[in-house]
Image (cartoon, rainbow over all chains, first blue to last red; front, side, top):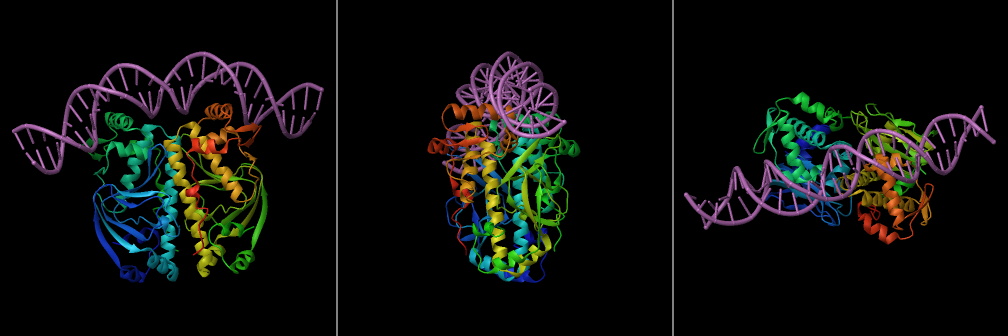
Length: 235
Length: 235
DNA sequence: TCTCGATATTAACCTAAGTATATATCATCA
DNA sequence: TGATGATATATACTTAGGTTAATATCGAGA
């Protein structure tokens, strides 16, 4: 599980063993638990085994912006691995099972084993690429495309990670949180979801979403998976 | 110059010599020249010696979003150092002097000299942190705060890099481009600049901007420099 | 089964920001 | 020195999305 994430970037040989050998602590967190708080000096490095999590920042006036979303199998703290103080918050979205590794030990491993360091680096580069796409999405797409893009990204990522069948998935968040991720209000998220549904681009049952017209949705979303770097080869 | 950028992250000893020893090509680019195009397989790694540059992505319908801005002394291609295909465009903003290093050589150096690899990693982590702040800025702040935040960030970064005296600076971009960076239209950028000016928060002469009431501006902008990780220590 | 808190949905109304277009300013260059 | 193209500024009007608040729905307990 710890190395499942490494695979997407650059397969290593038997330094998997080294990764697996890292001492870790397993713990289950309740929804909305903080894993990292802005201002903290990060000591540990968390990996999401099950459940969902997100990164979040807040404005002085208390507006929240979700800055990224994380699915089972993804590491949560590479962004702070070499930084002294956290610049954002990391929180669980749902109840989540999390493995915690010592930050120093991981850094040591990254330094001593080049291929592991490389894999971690690639992982953070892909994350950065997703940040860029989110900037584009929030800055330049209207609510319908923006939401559609978000849904497409989530679908593809879940699919890649093998967490879900292609038919659809259970959105692990409220419309309020969806708004925080998209830079919209909950009310407008609701309007927009309804509008996509009315056009038959998605269908829903409670939070379960499926995609009766995937191609049409993808087109509306202006979605291309290039920025996810799915085909990234080891090197 | 090449290693000036490394300093902000984690000073290395005499592997500066190794960096300096990298063969490079010097070239001057005209404004708006493409350095990297989305879809390309990056071969070279550019460092901005003078002038300004930015990263940019476009929507299917042709809307542009500037995703980051770069000032003299900053490396431009670490984001693609270990990725096979570019996910965004890099362009000069002004006429710019650029040193080009072979990507393979730099990767080799990053691998063989841990402290250089580390410095590069820290640099990309800080860039990622800036991406996150931009997501917050675009997603959750209104036009006045958003523009003010942008101006503050630019001021601080220029100041840190020693490019400018604290009194103010010459904005190297049109209001159109400012809009592309902020997720606004040029018209609204103009309104917003005028409004900040009317309130005495900035003063202008053509594109030269100065800050008669820095503290007030910074407060309006909800700006805290934490996310720039200015105090990042070597480790 | 009933209650409660969290979500979701809806409606009415408001405003920040977009659109469209005209005009002014400025730097460049023939 | 006058023309030209790129910016910047201004104005009128429209609209996507925000605000507020009321109502409906649902799952978890008691």
